[in-house]
Image 1: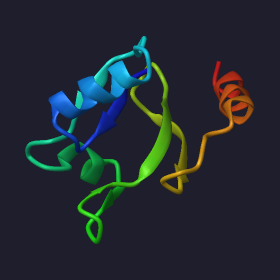
Image 2: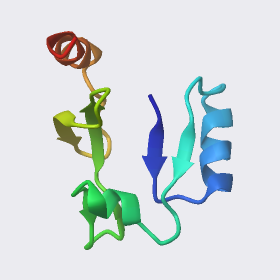
Image 3: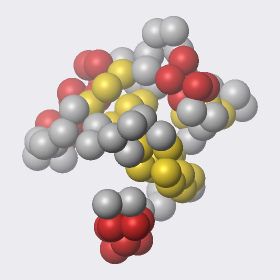
Length: 88
């Protein structure tokens, strides 16, 4: 598991610290701005940042599940776990 956003590393570090620490890598898609988000089809040109999304990628690198969220929405962990179980 990792988190990717278009924010610079310093912003990501501050965010993780504000949450009391994050147990997974926080990755910056800062430069070239949004390149990873664009490859995954979740870069929002109008907002200049990635949309909030979750991806499940299998051990072969194949995307098995994608779900986009509104900025303030909280993902449903039960739904995510159910999707993970489908690809085991």
